[in-house]
Length: 68
Image 1 (cartoon, helix red, strand yellow):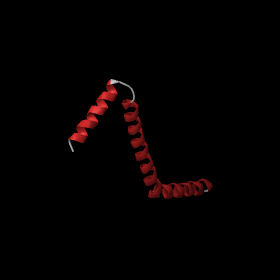
Image 2 (image 1 turned 135 degrees about the vertical axis):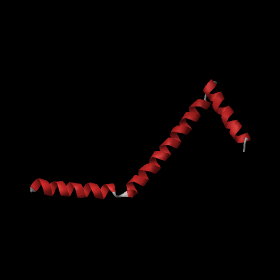
Image 3 (image 1 turned 45 degrees about the vertical axis):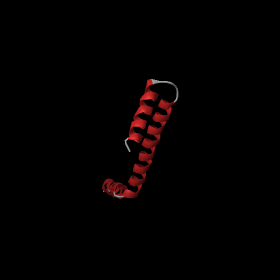
Image 4 (image 1 turned 90 degrees about the horizontal axis):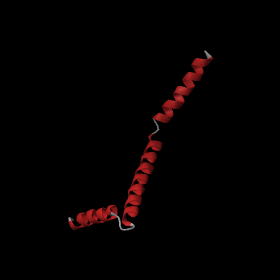
C-alpha cells in the first residue's frame, strides 16, 4: 500500500513536469543560440590565417552576397 502511494505521487510529479512546455521551449531557444554561436565560431576560426578553409568560407560568403 505504501509503495503504491509513493508510486502514484512520483507518477503525478513526473506527469506535471512532462506536461510543462515552458521549460522545454526555453531549452530549445538556448540550444538554438548555442548552435548559432558554434557556427559563428567555426566561421571566425576559418577566416583567421591563410588556410584553404578560410579561403573557401570567404568565397562562399562572397558568392552568397553577390547572389542577393
